[in-house]
Length: 336
Image 1 (tube, helix red, strand yellow):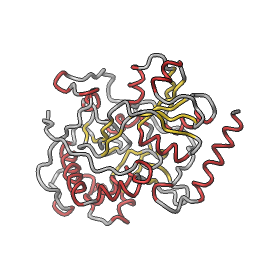
Image 2 (spheres, rainbow, N blue to C red; image 1 turned 180 degrees about the vertical axis):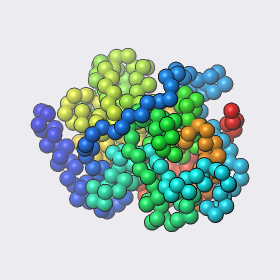
Image 3 (tube, helix red, strand yellow; image 1 turned 45 degrees about the vertical axis):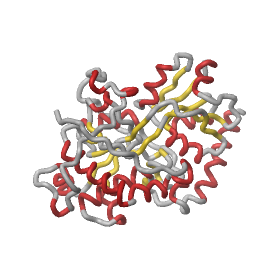
Image 4 (cartoon, rainbow, N blue to C red; image 1 turned 60 degrees about the vertical axis):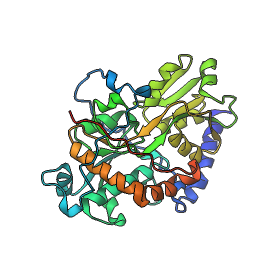
């Protein structure tokens, strides 16, 4: 297939989604990325991080978070001097999100709003702080759209209060930021053209194929285990889709959640192979804001038991990823 034919196919694939974007929540197509690149924030230092021996769980994944001090406080009884009061007094929750990860965080081309599973999670945080209803929560979110590589720097610089951006919890990241308890469980797979002969990451490795990976992701780190692959790292997963459609790469590797959104956007692709990593997602929060982590964990505990987590999952992901239940919380992290 020529580049011109691929581009035409991509446009035709997008048109039906645009026409039905006002229907089911999980079927909305993100707007094309336009304009200048996001502002880059440098991390406060250039220290090299590694997993200490007492946190060396499988693949460095450490989902344990800080246990809440008690039940979730009401918006009118937030602890004096807390991070939550600071956010409430400011009048907005500053959030770091994706705007082109369909199903998790993507701009609706009709309404212009960014929406998805991750955005609904952050709306619940805003409701818990400001005491508003679901309709009012969106207006209290101060959106900062960021690529994968800027998730940690934006938190460490204080430019955002919280990040919801399909971010895997691991011990290297725990040394730079803090995480909520696990709110979603994913795993890495591969996206190829529907006509591709490749059916797994191992076949791509053996063939010396060129594979696109989002820069700053754990998916990129995993490519060290596949030396035969020619890895291309691009700022966002949508950039990888463009590269696949143009024939510049033979595959994209990423979390199954993200790849499901790409397949929905371009039906001429296929997600293949078994999961070959474990990716527990956490809401990222600055390391010094342990009180906010505990607050968010108390909220997530409520959402696991009162049906809110399930309702959000069913709205955005059930039709694409099948039935799931909330991941079990893991506590026991000790404050340093």
